[in-house]
Image (cartoon, rainbow, N blue to C red):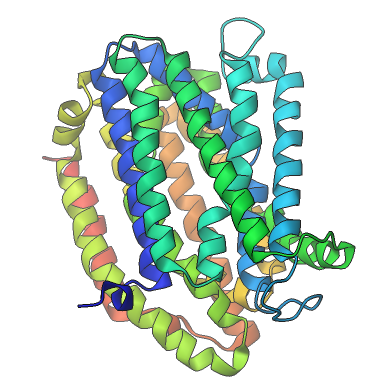
Length: 439
């Protein structure tokens, strides 16, 4: 059997996210079982939170724009070796460097924001290098996707994330402090950056294009602003928790506020892989049908798995991590409920249509609701209240987009979502969530 025939771009990107999730999850487990104190684990989470907080919005927006524009560029058309990869890599490197500089000169403010003792961010030099490198290397798997090389995606994911697992955790297991593990993380990203440079040289003309950059920023700007608002929910949550409580409580919250990333990453990878198919409206019906069918397949096992996790999380958390993370299970259950929102792929369709302004407006709705409710509920239910606020805000955001698609394009949810199975699974998920409080 030829395995290449069965590894599509969608499956390869999902496999990549699976590998990524497993490695990051193993790092968390190893850290919780190691000699690191809870406060040091909180420092590690803060390190990643700062790096992601200054870059997640423009990385996500530009990445989605790249998927929509690569095969449908007004500047370059569909030429085999155009300068798109070169120009996008240049912009990613520039913005990553500016983000690192911003963090460096904002240490005092960030330290207060995260309740860090002292005026400086721990391991700032390492953080600076990590921010500069981590932005551009996110492009690699999507370059392979756009060049239709699914096998390369899987091999790249297996090799680099396996190396990351060793380089980050081995120093800790050998008794060295957290800094050596962070140096290992930077080392892996240096290797990834080398791979990126090879890909750019191989598949792209090394030519700077102002016209393309104008086209690219026109498409990506609303997405960047939308993700800055919408995707900032997890960072807003963490900021509030770190401001209200100490680093140990932040670690407890972060270990629970994860939605079970494996599911989210697979859904996210699927949505990204489907986005280019909606760039050509002449194939709209077939694309909607494929989206509906593949969504049904994902739901058939992700929903049951989510239900099982909700019912068992309070027993699993103290075993997988340690008893200090028992409260994380309650937060985790709330975030698991967000999975019912992730199956609404209205954003995927709109990005394929190059209609990004509605996504921006939906994000405004989400962030207003999220911040307002978080400020209220954190005083009622603590860190659990923050999670509940996020869930409610996501629901209203996606309702707006569903209504927009119906009114503007006459695309009903039933055309891209298997409604009956979705309603059934959502109902069972809610029942399981309610029942989890009485187990």
